[in-house]
Image (cartoon, rainbow, N blue to C red; front, side, top):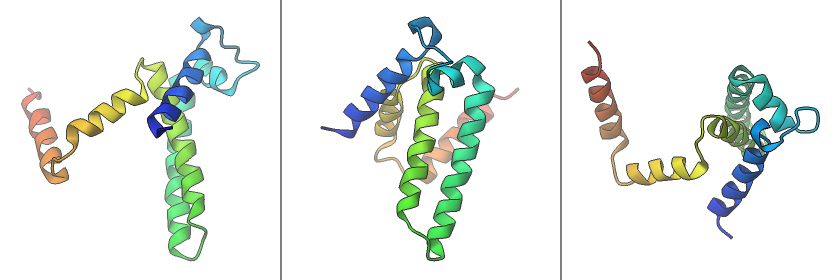
Length: 121
């Protein structure tokens, strides 16, 4: 079983928790986050990203590196809630990563900056 399958299954569960699909905020954490709106799940993404950083810093000083995995899982989960809210899927993220494959990160960043500048008045 591939990680894409696992992400697709989780994305389907998250999708099922949307109000339009019968998600009940009183019975589902995801439904509650979606019901509260972007501020709720975006705040969680910020919190989880900070926890990833803290776990990594702890690992640098003798802490358990396995904590990073758990914190990244929490971050990915909340990012997947955001993706669902905006009508996107993990497959969209994988496609973007595949599009970037073989491109230098330095070149990719320079290209994005150039495109951004061209779009400015």
